[in-house]
Image 1 (cartoon, rainbow, N blue to C red):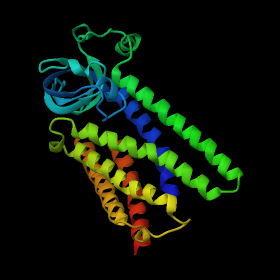
Image 2 (image 1 turned 135 degrees about the horizontal axis):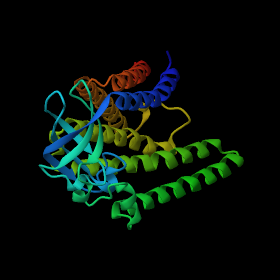
Image 3 (image 1 turned 90 degrees about the vertical axis):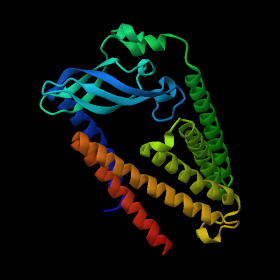
Image 4 (image 1 turned 90 degrees about the horizontal axis):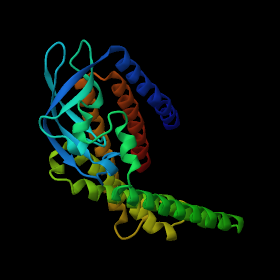
Length: 296
């Protein structure tokens, strides 16, 4: 099975997994209260998710009052009210009627205590002025979009003029340059969080992003003088070493992320996520085999 087939299966399976999870939650879920036992909050600008960049994200532990008996579990939320969670706060969750498993977070039990509209807390936030994090994200998106659009236009000019190699190199710079800058910014955002090195998922995340930077920066540095095809060993100034280190970091972080995801999915008995992770593992394994074969 080729890499293209695996990518196609992954793309087709992802929406199906989400639909099956939602269907299972609606069929088996019942509402329950969850008391926050401990919580740590990272403010706006956190790059863990898209919503956390504007609203921040809260990590903690809670006690769920399940019909079969109370139990404790870890939680994470990037909702607009995440920064107002405290020890003792009550959240509403959807739990499996038979198993001690949280299916979805519904929101605060008392929205007024969180300063939220009971009907639509998201709509209330959007009515106000945009946050500084949202403004920065919007400015960055417009800037990157403008640079890419200009590069595409210039590449078209080069291609029409008969210099296809220059057009391709310009497009590579246009698309991978912002990607490297974004990855570097996300690494800085992660390591600025207190105690990030004590949380394995964030360590793997930072390592993977650092690997992407180390992998692509040498390629972009050498690209202006590179021929159409070149082996990595022909790159000067020790750049192949950076590429190798970047490849190792990306591979290790991908494997670590899958292992952590499998542990979490098994603990929560989330079979849909296990299927998704299995497809990801097959895709990453196929890519690694191709890379090893190419280097040997």
